[in-house]
Length: 459
Image 1 (tube, one colour):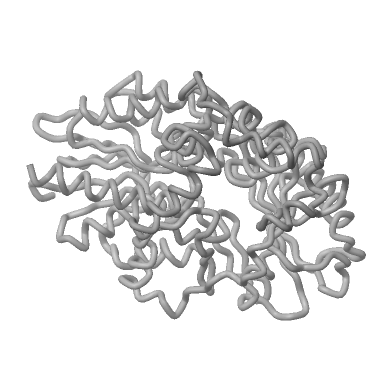
Image 2 (cartoon, one colour; image 1 turned 120 degrees about the vertical axis):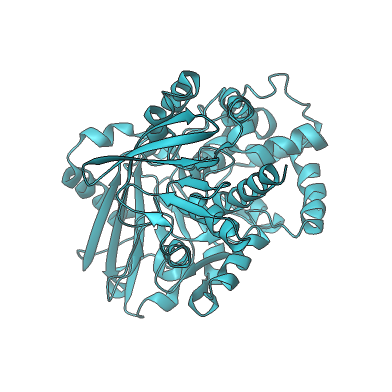
């Protein structure tokens, strides 16, 4: 390998994007990937009649880099913009689906929140900053600023939909930094939302609430697949990482491939593998980092895909789907209405749905018979959607370690990640346990990683 060789660990969206951006600038990049496919948790299945994703179902177009990648990879003709119907989101309350209000008039008319809860929001601009700083949960933050009912029927289901997490455990500062910043920087959510929108416009960024949703004709995995093709010959598949060690003026990465122990030396290493897998790889180099990696919780999530004849469905299909508050005591977290969001991928006679089960709310699913879970969830879903007959198609995927939870005290992890990079110059930490869990966040942070590596090499 060349003098300034760069080694990327993991061919998920974070590793691929960083490698692609660096290669584009002429750097020598090699990727080690354990599996024989790329994309990490991004998994698209192109069933002839019912294509679907078993991981992320879409990408929020929040930063210019996303469209730049699409253009660089010549994927414009594969791109799908979400149907405007997908802007409508439902929340389950008392076994009925209520549209989440998106205007002042709709908010005043909705039965999702009581009159008392609506009046409670008027107090928000007068609520002071927290004394807990970084050490408060999203539940405490929202309850203090907006009230219990808003926590129960807006934030609780939202947190389940994004993190598959529990608001009582997640750190507001780490899991929702932009929300936390509204209070810290502007003193309140309503004032902050108005002022921060102007600042985002100057940076050509969009909020996650207003950003367009995109995918591709053959699913989200189209993007990592295209980057892998552009990096052809630079990805070593089937490489089971063993350890990282210092070796004179570089770093040595040991790994197993086809039963043989091999190694590569590099001046720059970017690790984008999940924290729970990185723990053993970094143990030889830094036991404290390894311990932090082991402490990060990754609850299981069962992704359950179902397709029905439209004529068998009594519920109007006019939105993104619905989320379920914990208070409703259902066996799943919510459902995405795939064929409403991206209708061009399906025929007009069937509807396709993706249901999510488990997460931090129900981690015990990992020890339960999958068929038993599916039967219970399907019964509840069909009742809520007024579905009369059995599905014409179904499939599932159990992600045993799904989404990293930015739980209370996560700021200490984030500080140590920075300290580790100072302690071991040339090693960089990336992936969705740092800087956000979404595909859009991962792409944005991959751009930052590429800039950090380029700046390091320029010294």
